[in-house]
Image (cartoon, rainbow, N blue to C red; front, side, top):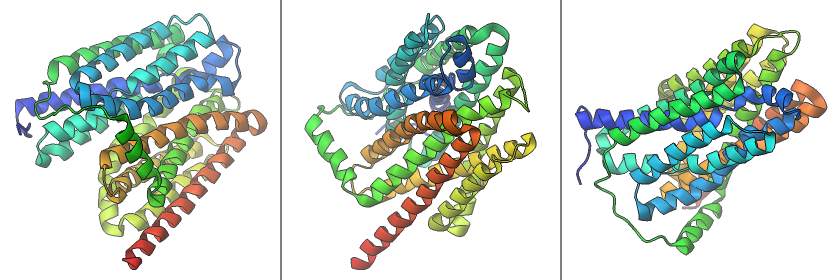
Length: 399
């Protein structure tokens, strides 16, 4: 096996390539979120319909990830990722010229399909090509690229739209993403430890079904579903709150709120130490409690208090997600990569369902309705974690 080792030039090029890949993927994915209020005004659609600019993309991403990961086992890693990044970038540019809301939604759905070619394959490439002792550093930089891309996509599109309109914002993200694609293509070496396998749809179906028969895993899948559903719904509709009275903030100022997501970049370091101190079981309850406290503070009609609430919610979200995604790998008896892919499928599907459901609550009950919905979501997370822990302990005692 010809591994890439930390400290070498190839390691630096590889990690930089995946930083660019993560940046490209999540900048495009989340670029529409701060533009939702603009879509309601420009296209004359409701807030619920405007949320489709996000939810159709994440739903298409969720479904397509199950397919791309398996296809790459036969066709390879790098070429699929490059084509996916380039196609997503070009589609983002085309979206800037959407003549109506229906075309915009169709293009955003296609973006979700092609974007799936990166997150479904990236971790497989990294685990195959990077030496095991250098794996944590490489994975950390890739995840940092994801987080920074998500922040940049939101802030850039929101601020830019205030000056040159949403067309310019989408176009700009597309151009920047093409640059990231070229960096990825030039920096990443072709895989050397990859062994192609025949695509077997029946075997794939059997292993996925096997994971769904594991009740502990299903609980963790549903927690992921609820977590991102809460995250996307909170951040999608809080922009409407800050743009309206009594805050009446400008689009560009509201967009800077998304810098709170930088908390996610540093949360892993803090979470790791706290997990070592309290243990995973205790800390997942602590993390969910912080998430719940953050949502409760969002009921207070005061800007600094709401920003504090968003900060606590965001930390709790990232901490909970990192622990639960790790528990999926621990509790999968076999085919751990597919179990992780299935978790991500539920995770991104949750953002689609949660974002759309929040639109219904927003239309009927306003911001308080959205907040109450998310309190229910987090309460269900507590319940599912408790059930999973009891079942796991029951299995251990039976053995």
